[in-house]
Length: 306
Length: 306
Image (cartoon, rainbow over all chains, first blue to last red; front, side, top):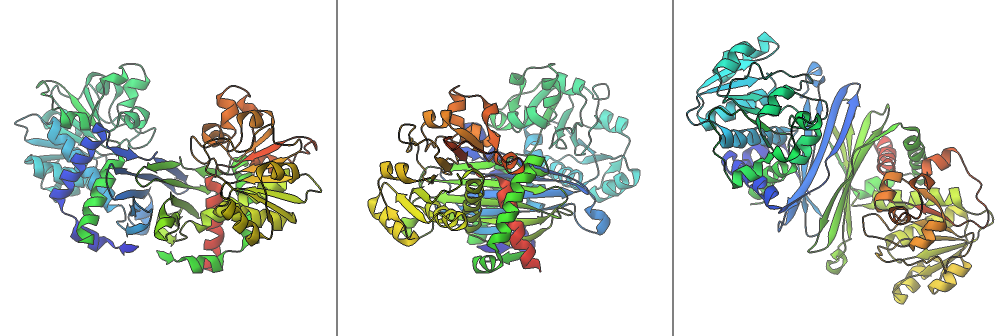
């Protein structure tokens, strides 16, 4: 088994190829040619943290992937990254472990940003120029940078509960720190990246036509978007099962405001594009699906094995 | 992260300590002080194989464990072991990976044999002397050897569909290859270790008072014991949820012959021992639970880290 450290992984990672692979992963999920394992979760209380295990393979592939990723939120107090983890590449012919990609959670962060970018491309209103970024963590930075760059959204607005962090991120991204009300008025597309358990964006503050990429709700109990907002929006989800269980889309469904068949999976949307009305609010609810991990790990592994 | 190869793992493994730890793991599961992740499965068709991912931790521990284990049944045709896998030891304080135990599935095989031995000890009829072993694979050998040695069952009878393999295993264990009818008549305790999808032991051929350790049914569709047999037996299960889903105990429950509350978990039995009647048939249905993996990996890791 080859042990691959982060610098070598980053050398082998081609962003454009990985984006194509992740998008193709969502399409394959929709076409039924991805086999995914049940997602494993562990929660930790003291110190607080969680761990996700995801894995699977695409039909016909020679390899399958398992990854585990942890978040321990107080790690930065000790000078450590909150994210950790690795992806393991295994032969789908013999079960032998071929490689361990010690990505320390970076590939997970990247594939998450890529999913946001792919979803943004699929729902953005033509002519959009302003990206609103809610949150100041690693996903705020990565989604903000990648979506703005690849969709050509030149104005970047950042809102965070910490004014200092928001100002720092705005400076890093070449954008502007604003309050949430202003962000909602000016942004064409908003990406929400907080671990909030209480709604940040409300129906009242969200303009008609706003497109929202919501990536914060990855475990039960998290909610960034008010239920009245998701109840009236067009809902695109990375995985209907997961999003009903613990995504933003789950809130209006579990409270009976909308029916589960209102959800459209991202893979379905990519395969069968929809022209949304200009005044529709469209939300892409991204909880993270193993096809993203499989796709990015395979892209890296194919370059590494030469 | 320390990468630990198999010889070093075996050096660090103390069987007696691991048995105590695995038994304590079942007790902790019963007491509610084990947190386990959802089990992940993947199936492969060509070549046929499967992969299980299990993980979790005991309350208060500094580490958590994830393991994945694969079985590719045609590997031996290429001179490879059918089993593969590894266990990853992770800090429960920061999420940092501390060690990868490249056990190639051996720790899984061992913790499975240990669970069989622990269950056998809990249900064996006093005065038993004859162990029946159904199957000729790695678990037939490991369960047969360990149960016989630790319970002092001096007579070992082996039955397998392949007479040649049964004779070879009988010789290796210092036992006798017999037909299934004779095994059922003579054995006090029977361990069934086949991947069968059709019952091997029937109600008709099983004597009153027989104790059975069934370890073959680890995924949906497998069945070693006729449903009429499990329906009339006292049923001990390693995990009620798993056994109802895909264990031997699931067959009479899913067909409505018995109620789920008839099941007693092994951890409950260990905490509150039961004196079974001499003429009761008692079945321990073992599907494999992450507490076993956590326990054995922790035992190894504690010795390795010194």
